[in-house]
Length: 149
Image (tube, rainbow, N blue to C red; front, side, top):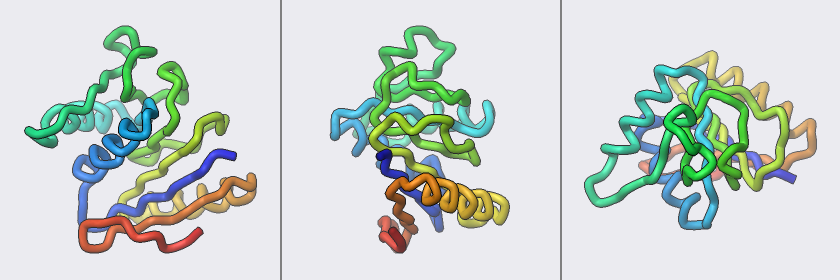
């Protein structure tokens, strides 16, 4: 079964939190797919991944840039698995995947957005109803703390 992790952003923006999680995914040897809910957010994330740290580099690309199957981190708005990810990050209110054929799905949502909170609650019920192991994590003092699951 695919492990589903819910990451509740509190006090930190997605552009700050996502790169750290992507680094950990690459350390595990996983390709990652980042699916955003809009093209605008995808463009902002693309820029953020190039500039988030002078000491690190996250190899990534967008699907339309060519050879997406070779990207360790693929940025897209589509429900695809073209780079054979071990983990899928759903951001900016991207919907749950149609199929759960990866090791892990991470749904990241903004704690200051009431609609995103409602959608995350509904997604939690959906994945629990499908029998997937799910955990809920919330930011506290700059780190992630497991709150449920």
